[in-house]
Image 1 (cartoon, rainbow, N blue to C red):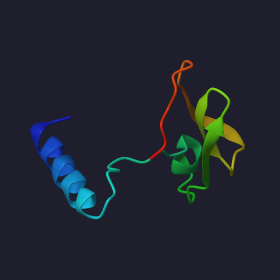
Image 2: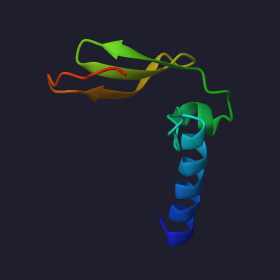
Image 3: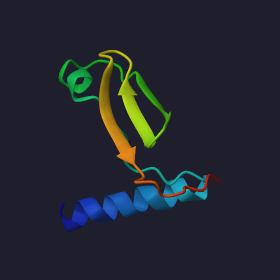
Image 4: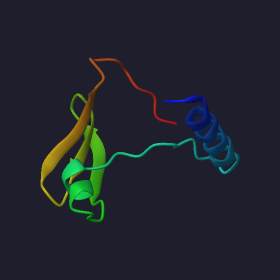
Length: 74
């Protein structure tokens, strides 16, 4: 990532924070992206953490394992 890209990301994050949103990058299914399909993603709690699931391909995109760490929800 170059300095210009980093600056653009910082600006976007700052703008979103004003609205209460700190997201600057989203999860995507590579297969859906390759086929230019709408992202139909499920996100939720699983016993070990969080899972991101492609509803179109019924495949795991990502899971975050909290390794037994307690997570506080705000």
